Length: 281
Image (cartoon, rainbow, N blue to C red; front, side):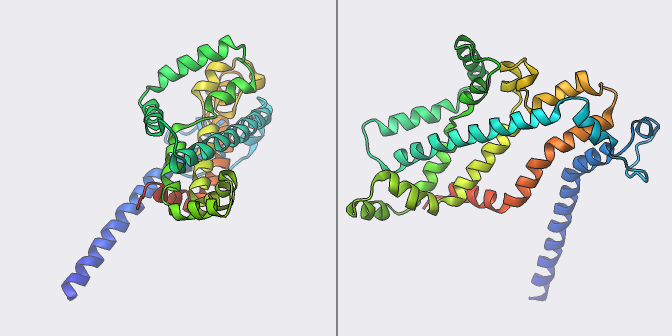
């Protein structure tokens, strides 16, 4: 019995040691980014051997991040893009997932398989098709052109459908006997029960929109519609210059901070929602 307890303790220590080492490896780039952002341009270039700390931190790089380029404008554009796109995604995904999970109609399984097949199409082909469509509709350099191709997601519909199917069908039948409409059942019963997954999908979509780079870069060449991800390139080319690494890191910290805070606040809901959405029975 003692040998078994000792073996479990040694195994536990080994596991936690590996987790700590892995955490340090993962977090080190963030620490280095933050450290570089508080170094002055002169002190950074004077370091022949990189230092892992600084005794004279400065915040002038953060001031430059907002003065060299219209970073606040990029933030506003990104907030508009993220909020509207996420809202449209929920409006489309929740009723679609409910229809596939609860309603019976002709060709439902075939239609759902067709939806899943879309996930097998390479992203590059979708980008080319969307670019051609948006260009022909003359929606380049508009928020509509930015938002509409990202408003629907097969993955989120699938994730919500799997979660909705875990709710006992007897609740739906009882609600129908009481005269409840499908929409009222969806909003008053199903969505509240599956709130962790809905919150998870919302947060994942926000992160996806905030980090979006390829599509906004293709569809916008007007700085008035740049997002923060595209603003980084503008900062690099026309802001500080490629050699001012501390100022670049300050801009990256400012851009990354909202997502880091969002994840830290909702990390438990994200993990619970994903685990629940992937478990059936």
